[in-house]
Length: 585
Image 1 (cartoon, rainbow, N blue to C red):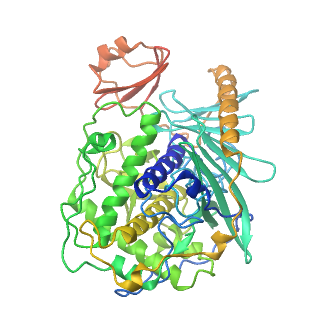
Image 2 (image 1 turned 135 degrees about the vertical axis):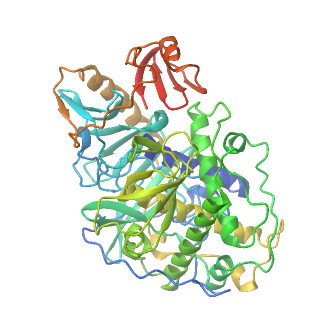
Image 3 (image 1 turned 90 degrees about the horizontal axis):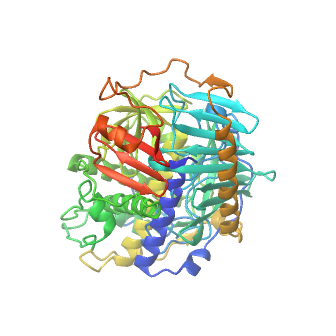
C-alpha cells in the first residue's frame, strides 16, 4: 500500500489502540483474538445480491461484536489502522506484478487492522484490498526510469511516486507517506511503512471458501482481521468478513430511531486530535437515532486515527484551517451507516457458521445496485480529478452515483466534503474500485467497533436502554474462529523490510536520473502543470525554502520531519529534503 495505504493501516491500528484504551481492553486481550490464514483468492466472483432489507425493530441477525475481526471487539475500540499496502503491485511505473487495477495489485492482504484480535482491535486502515495505497488508478504525466537497481516512477513535477527494487514495491503517497509491499515465495504478503508498522497477510480456507488473515502491528500492538478475496473485472481485492455477529434484536435496536432524541458527551474537548480537526468536524448536539451516533463515531475515529499517525510522523503540529463538514453531508453518511447495518443484519441472518458472499457484501454490490453510496476516506490517496491531479485524505467524504460500467477498474465520485487542502468540494475524482473496497472495509470495521461500544454503553450517559434480547453478547463466526494465529515475529519482520527498502530505494534513486532510461507512464498525454504563481520565477526542484517563499509568499503551515520538511502554501505543498525542494503537490 502506498503512503496513504499504510497510513490507513496505521490509522486503523491507532483507532483500535485508542478504542481499546477507552473501553479498558489490554493489548494482551487484543492479541487473544485472531483468525487463521486463508487460501488463494478465488478467481471468479459471485453475482452481487439484492440490496439487504432493513432489520425489523428489535430483531436482527446475530451480529458480530463490534469490530469484527476474528475475535469480538471490545466495545468501542476506535482506532483504525492505515491500510498499508494493498495487494500486489501495479503495472504503473514499474511496480511489481502487473494488474489491471490502476496501480494496485492483487489483494492478498484483505482487510485492515492487525490480525491478532480479529474482532476487536482498533479498526485499522492499513492494507487495503489489493492496491498500492496512496494512489488510485493510473496518473497522467508520469514517467518511469529503469536501471540495474530498480525502476523509479515520478510525477509531472519530478516527485518520486513509486520504486520497484529488490522484489519490493515502494509507493510514496500524500503527506510524505510511504508503503512497502512484498509478496514472499509462500504467497504471504508483507506490507510496511517507513516506521515499521503494517501487517503480514496469509491465506486459509473454510469449507472450500478462501479467506485472508492479516496480523497488523501498529503502535506496539498486534491484532488480526479476516477478509475474503474477490475478483472484480480482473482486479483482486479483499472484502471484510466480520469476526462476530449480534442477535436480531440488537441489529433492530441499532437500526431504528430512539423514542426521543438524546444528548451525549463524547469528551473530545481538550484532545489534540479534536483541536486539530475541530474546524472540520463537529458532533451532533443531539441524537435521534443510533445511526447518527454511529456517524459521529465513524468520523471521529477516522480523524483520531489519522491524527495519531500524523503525530507519530511529526506532521500534526499546528492547528489547521479546515472547511467545515456540513449537516447535509453528515446525513448522507448516516444514510450509508443505515445501509451497512442492514447489510450486516442480512449476513448474520445466515448464521455464524455460514461464510458471507463477498459479491454481495462488498463494493461489487454497491457498484451495481442502482443506489448512491457514500464513502469516508480512510487513507490518503492521489487521484485524478476534473481539475487535474489532487489528493483526498482521511475523513474526506465521497459520493458514488449509479452508472459505473460492469467490471470497471475505477469509478467517478463527487467530493462532498473535504478539509480544503487538496481536491476541492464538488470536484469529480476517479478512484480505483480496490480503494473503494478499502473504504467500505474501514467503514464496516469501525461501525462494528461502534456497535460494540453502543451495546456496552446502552442505558448509560443518556443512551437509551436496549431491550433485554438486544443485550446478548455477539457470536463468533466459524470462519474467524479457525483463522491462523497471529505472526509472532510481525514487529521484527516489518522493521527489517522497512530498513531493506530504505537501502533499495536509495540505490534506485541514485541511478534514476534523466539518463537512466526514462519512459512515459501509462497515460502518454500529460496534463499540463498549473502555471506557477510567478511566471518570471518558476518553481524548480533544487530551490531553497527562501527561494520558494520569495515566489509563493509565507506558508500557512510547516511540517517538520527532521531532514525533510513540507511547506504548505494556499494552493501547493512543497517538500524540502536536506534544504532543497524535491517535490511539488
